[in-house]
Image 1 (cartoon, rainbow, N blue to C red):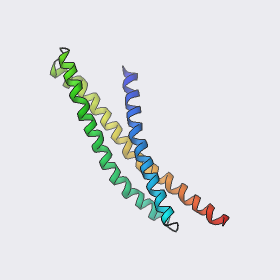
Image 2: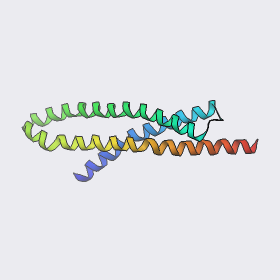
Image 3: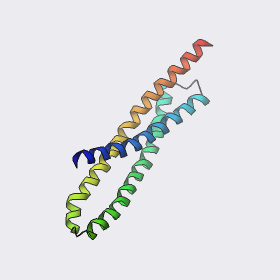
Image 4: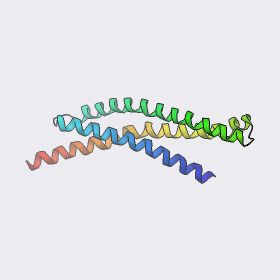
Amino acid sequence: PDEIFHAEILLSGLGAIMDVAVAIAVSLSEIVTKRPEVTFRELFRSGREIGYDIMGTMINVLLFVFGCGLIPMCVIRMNNSVRFMTIIKLHIPCELCRFFIESIGIVLAIPVSILITSVMMKLTIRKVKKTC
């Protein structure tokens, strides 16, 4: 059961992290396409603002998914004669743990994706300028 729990955390967390990273990369790419003279600092700040907006919505989505997943899980377990207090003591902490780990992953993915995308976009612009 431990390995299945860890795999579930990784798979569900990676989906949310990938969504955040791609959204930031596409947004920063569009900024550089429209304004190639943008400085690295401006690009990084824009990415940070975009990341803050995305972070709020993604964590809210995770929270609602957490809540929606609890309802059928509680109903199924209670139909199988599992006491409500047992569900609260044993199963809800696991779900909360998953939510917090995924949220931390999203928060950490934002600056990493901003930095990598900003560096790559600015290097690409420099290469294009040198070849022209």
